[in-house]
Image (cartoon, rainbow, N blue to C red; front, side, top):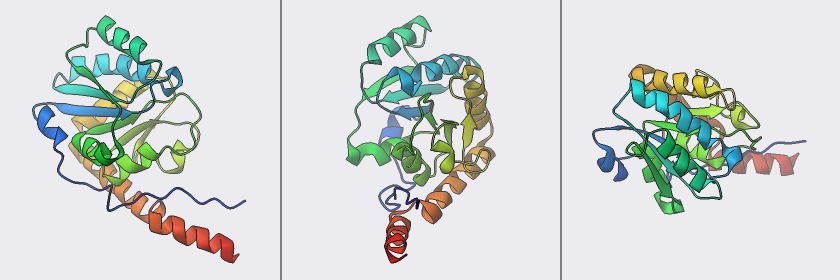
Length: 204
């Protein structure tokens, strides 16, 4: 069996100025983008964000995507008293994704479902963002915990809270993880690498 990973266009997805960031100039932005199904674990991120916001009041959580679990997530937001600090952005067009990644301070993938290798993980990393993600499925293929991102046990609200808070309180760690994330995509998950690996498989 030969494995060829999806490749990311590292010129389309790269660190850049964000128009969206202007809407959150006085706040640090935590971003999650996914289909809003229960298995995607956004409810755990919301519960973790309660503790995060209590400790770091200048934070805002932006949840993008849509799906059958959205109503339940919006109700949970109200129950947690987070209505003023959480936004639901709906679907994001392909052309706007890079702007959203570059607006955030931390990108989170709280899934509890076995994933392959989510494109949002690779795209956010290509934009030089520190990613906090569940240690499940193919996600650790790209993220080495503490080197180019942070991994958490799926569904562990406290660990999720602590890892995100750690990034918000340590700018040096956040920058280091983001730089290493970008390099990982350039070295192992670029479009060029995908093409080279595909050609090599045919050659063999």
